[in-house]
Image (cartoon, rainbow, N blue to C red; front, side, top):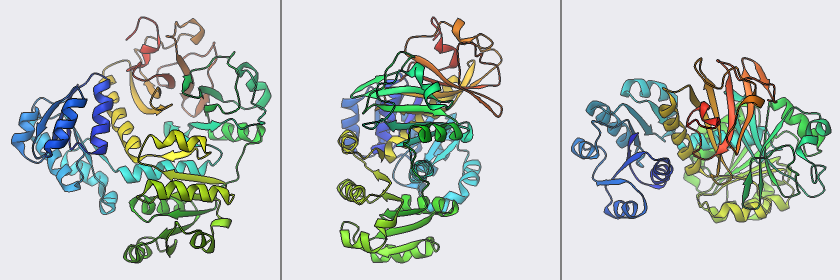
Length: 455
């Protein structure tokens, strides 16, 4: 596909890297000559220096023949104008990054009025991911399929766990839950497992199942964490506002600690049901005085990675049951995981993957299936994809044991109406189903690609 990325900041560059790796024809537009020079040296992409709102710049970038334009500059209005211009020039699909909370309630109106295919709000997407984690605190990460009817959660096997030394073929009888271990990360190795795979303490597992069966799994393994009722959030930026609203709507108590007095006054207006504290969250006395010791969860959302890491470690030392930290620098993740902070979120990664998912869905739209959901695991080595199965899918109606699946490919779940199936050898994927598949990143673009000899 011919794709234009207008605005090559952190998110724009990250998306460009992902899509270039997948073989798309990428053109990057940015007004900064330094950014253009950097991307030109690093990526296989055409680079155009100029304003994203200038129609001549967009023509030079090929907007008249482009399949998709991603407007990812730092300014909402620039992205919307860029999208309108691109559509007018002939670009088939346009996605705009829009961040202002004032636009959130108008997303659908703006999308239709401006002729956009999709509007992405990075801070809101990050807040939604954190909200999912807090609703299922036993997991380090929670990704949902089919509107939440099936989830894939990440969990690290602790020392002394009954899972340590257990072969996966023994798991169903041992835990009494209908779940599937779809990925095992051991050190830097990511394995798509089979029945003979033996789990070890320290392994990071990706477990697929319904919310009910996943809870049963964690209860059986004695690794279930109580539900979150009281949450302390440090940092009062946009993500904190979106997250607090989501948590308050679900009945949780929320305390927000923000050091800037003017911002605190605004937060009191934006979040009248939350407890707003004006103070320095890097001071232990501030955190303790405002309820850290009684909090079920702690979420670090300041603009400084160092502050988020240090306060999260302090909250962990105080016995807080669930901790989530926002970290912008990706290379910090591995260090933090070894310290026991498993729930790390990165806004750039979340949005980059969401945009890559949309592109994959466009590409697959004329095949035997379409990509409904896509997540990347194990530092991007593995993808979990949800496909909607069409009538002409070659793999439909054939028992899985008779399909010649490609190596490192696993059918993790089959969703049939309201029924969620943990697949076995006799399971058939049928038209109308949704199939959740685990594979090496970039290996699948449509469902029939699970079979040997198929693209």
